[in-house]
Image (cartoon, rainbow, N blue to C red; front, side):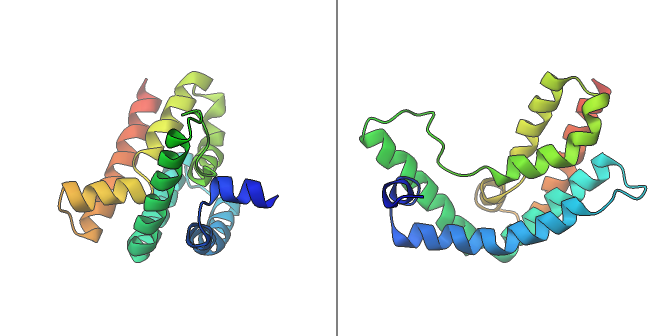
Length: 163
């Protein structure tokens, strides 16, 4: 990766350090979680387990995730001011990769378009943004916020499988 590429994705040294802080621990934890065999666990149960683990990680590192969100927004706004495309990727999208890997066993029973819609919807109930909304807008404490995200993940999975 060249210096120009690094500065395109990380406009400051602090934004790079925040991203590294988040990815170092969480990538390892989720590689282990996703690598475990299902052993009688349904893909839906594993998906809720993944959502719960990510949101608990966010809760434990809330200031770091809020800082990361600020940097993602700053990056997007800088691109907007520079006249760059709105479709520019601001971050890696690990959350979507984890969700996709977790629901992969459903590919035989859920049409591809429905699965993509489910994956996108599950992104809404996992991660820093969801946690921030539940904490700030809904005024929930961390445990209640996590309970809501787990409920929402179950509801989305049930709706997708029912359809």
